[in-house]
Amino acid sequence: MTIGPNSRRKSKYEPRQAPGAGGARTSAMIASLDAEGRETVSAPFGNALVELAKTREDIVGLSADLSKYTDMHVFANAYPDRFYQMGMAEQLLFSAAAGMAREGFTPFATTYAVFASRRAYDFIAMAIAEESLPVKIVCALPGLSTGYGPSHQATEDLAIMCGMPNLTVIDPCDATETAQATRAIADHPGPAYMRLLRGKVPDVLGEYGYQFELGKAKTIRDGSDVLFVSSGFMTMRVLDAAAALERDGVSCAVLHSPTIKPLDEETIAREAAKGGRLVVTAENHTIRGGLGDAVGAALMRRGVHVPFRSIALPDEFLDAGALPTLHDQYGLTVEKIAQNVKSWL
Image (tube, rainbow, N blue to C red):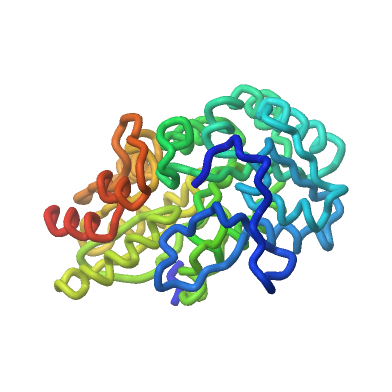
């Protein structure tokens, strides 16, 4: 369809509240991602969950000592009797969420992506996914969205979670999509894993009239030379790269694919087959087992043979440091994307 950082162990600190910010506030320790020159929305996940809970008494929230860093504190402040602080025990977090789901609730369980995907995988598999329970796992710091190094960088979470049967996997782009996807997974009857951009989140897709649909990829802009297939905040980056490349005479389309599993293979294959364009996947994830591998395999299965490249993180544990420096080092910046595309044409 075409349409127009912080360490885990800091719980003693309270969110700093800006004057006049109202009830929906987020921690000053949370830095915005790609927000310069863009409108931002504060805690889109937390606020969307609060709005849902006004009419759905089945919605409950849980966190593993990270409510302030997953925007779950917004829900906790609004509905303290429906929020459960499980402490630093991710296995307990997801087991409790599974038990609540069995009793008719729709639990939203939040933590960092590294702790859900690495530490609690077996508990999610056995307690939630095998029984296809409607637990919604919403995780901050996906991929390279923190400079704290391998202990907090969930660079392989999509590969891990996409390997789990029954689990829907979503990588939203911005504030608009985060709020829309929150509502969509609440209505989805099975379990879901959603990556989370937190704090003050840029609003990028709103100007395109975008509407999230579970399992659907959508063309954000059209172009004749390059087709970007992207997910997460990398859609922000490739949109900017497409604008920069256009000034150099390179016409780029952007196909945003927020649902990694189930992948919208039909739309991706149809768009990739148009006009002999270079297909470039772009993701905030290791090059192994994420969007790029899924798209490449889908094209091969469907007999679509086109020039193909991937922009992704390397298959290694990444460095710690300032996030803008790391993004430049690992090729996720607009400038590096544009340079790579021009070298591939």
